[in-house]
Image 1 (spheres, helix red, strand yellow):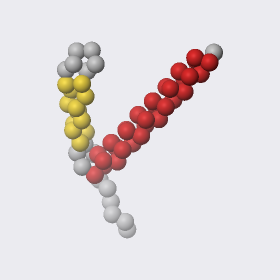
Image 2: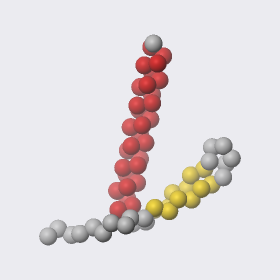
Image 3: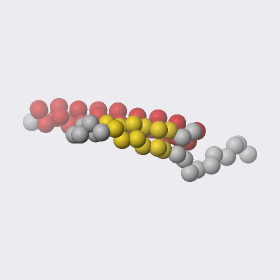
Length: 61
């Protein structure tokens, strides 16, 4: 049972880290386009992901 709790805690930590990364990426994308390169862990092929925002930010009124 202790091992299960440890693994769930590790999973929770990883999900928190991923949430932080995704949040910072979204904040950056809102300001300008972003190119993210991810390497496939199985075949090693580089995958390029272009992320742009379709939202117009308005200034304070």
